[in-house]
Image (cartoon, rainbow, N blue to C red; front, side, top):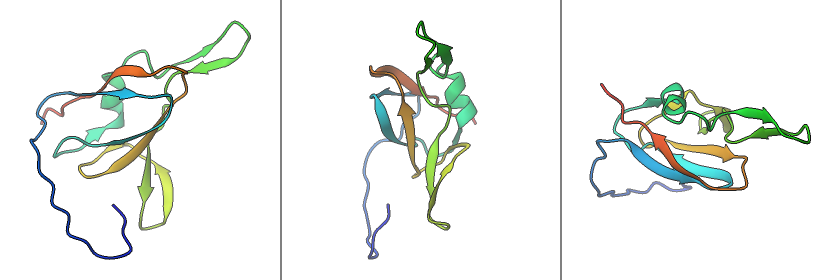
Length: 112
């Protein structure tokens, strides 16, 4: 979280200790890491076969379901960058190119 002034934020809840399922709406989707440890982008892609694809449709138009890029903000340099995974307390963006929601997008529970 970025704030112009220092703030103390208290968070309550239960730790997630299994795969996390979410829906990706068409367009940009904001997501965070639901775990207390990092998950690589490769592991997330492996848990979601068939949605990170490119196809040429009947009209010769490229069809992409979900962008194969995870974006995060680099606060030290003040810019958006491609990320190789998600970290606890991190904030990320992913783009769904399809016109429909993608149900059951999985962030796999990291096996340590």
